[in-house]
Image (cartoon, rainbow, N blue to C red):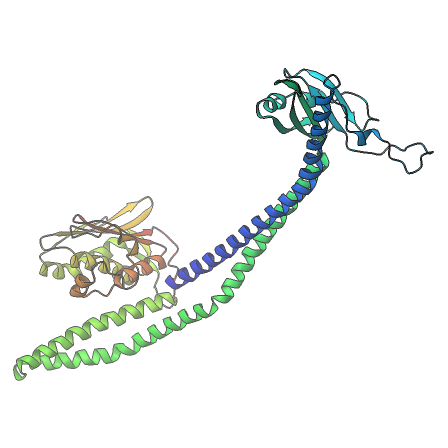
Length: 453
């Protein structure tokens, strides 16, 4: 139903907006938290210490060019509260230090603390970090070292204190496995929390929007009930007014010509309002699933022929020719009277908007396992921007022309709804000045319409 589709769209839109705002909020807060953790775990204790050590070694190298890579003093002093006791080794993250010349050849290397001996891993000494530092003055990267995992490296060019050249490059590195694992754990927790939050927000949003739209849904139901009741109640007085006016017109000779003209207007307008109330009542019943459809095997070609016969005189009055190209035995399951109403609506629109001398063709055919009833005309056509709105209630492409033709903008809405009730659809294509084609497409041999009464 149109209102059900509208409410569903509103519900989906509100939930989407709510979820989007939550996702953006979580992304911003999670990013800030991750950045803060990265700074506290990596930027200060790892990168900051490596830069400080490299700066100290560079200054020492400048003062004593012949003795590169002298470690900072704090690492040479054993830490012990009891001078007489043997110092206990403390477990520390090793720091790798290497000094290389301008050609990238290793001059000296060490591992801190000083108690650790050995040469830094080859993976620490290789790579493109030294050439990049020689180009930029300093550089940093990460390398994977076997049995250690990721290692952060910082390289700094050491200029000569006595000439314009450089002494070489000092490179400092520290394993960062713990920091990487901690950040990975934090990232996974943030992603898991965000995913669960979005899932809960989506489900909760659908529930809350459904509750929030209950008043709107109730208002639509009351509107449908009012339209159905009002249309039903209006039909009887309209019928009486029209009947009384027609009785008066039978005695036209006794009436003043001006009075007779007024009575003619009464008949015409009452007929128009009667058609409008009938259309509103039909739509209200379709919306409320109270439009009774008798399911039976019917021949779509017979329905098309019957509709053409009913409107052929109307077309002849406008100077139009109605031709038939019907495929026999186009059997579908549905309500023959309702389907004929759709065919009449499509033919009526074609006749109204086709100039005199034009041709209207109604045909039936099987297309891809479906039974199609097509109405094609050589009329004025419909601009492309209006085609998607056809079938909307009270929508008219040219309101002035539609009023002259007696249309209220409800015929196609009824045709669309009846087609949907039968599990089919009405498709309209058109080109200005070249005519319009309307197709009622139904599935052959279907079980029956969706609305049964």
